[in-house]
Image 1 (cartoon, one colour):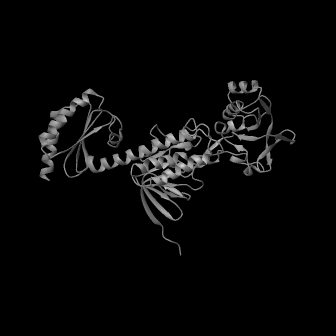
Image 2 (cartoon, rainbow, N blue to C red):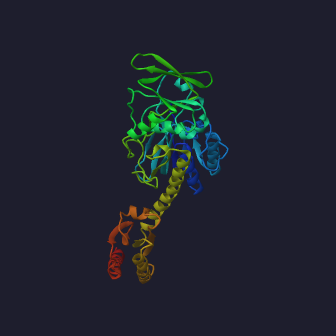
Length: 418
């Protein structure tokens, strides 16, 4: 007999437990929002596999990635974040109440933050899984270059990322050996990067090659390449291997709802807003230039803060702006605009004239245009008149206080006659 699913309700649901998701959860929980975080694999994300982190501010002693993310996890728990270590099966992101389905439970949330990150594309060569991340195969030169000082490393790939990261590695490693799929002199990167790499004395190239297998005892020590012309095996002794053959964003469960780039990354604005109201995204899953712990944390902070603002504005919009007890006047203005500020005096006169028969709201869009967006107002100043929770009139641009008074008089008479 199948067990009936239970339903749980939250203010904010964060999907993904990497640095971005953890930070977003910390910010939303600190704002007294009931927050849950879903992670199907390892809390901390890909950062947990980095042996030494040298460039995360405030941690000068080269901690492991997991040391940093464990602190984030503890901080989130201290803030009251609920953790659910399970796979999210599906989501429904449209509408004011979002739905997250897991195997046993349905979750409802006012806001969803997508922070599922991504995964590096791997070669799928023999024995690869034995050496991933902390056993010799890395995917981030910025993260792991310093730990390869004075060593020999292999780079797989010849695109812009592979060649540029390979050149960065030469600042630390003694030798960087690049496996290139194409004939000699042909790469997938831009010409400037290619010429710079070919001139770099620390870089060597194995043309017409692909990875056949990885070897080593407890740690990788040999990458066996295969010559695509002769099938000859080419063993390359090394201390580490860096794979730069692409990155796969974990957007499978949202790709039919969220606007993505051609490569599958989520498109957001600077507030981490997606194309769906109440849905935010942060970290490596979004379309961005630099993927680091520091940038993930920045994204998460914005997403968490934006979530709190979104929920507060939603409550104001429904409970205050669209209240049904009395006719309403909402004045939408920008505090930095002198004309808008001056009209505040006229709004006060109108409020006094109606002596409690009218609900008057003043909305400054200087810091957030959320309320204006919900009212479809893009020009300011503006006056919105509401009756029984519905917009009755919109007055945009040049405002005439007498005209507004006349409209309100007519509305109040109409309401009285009802």
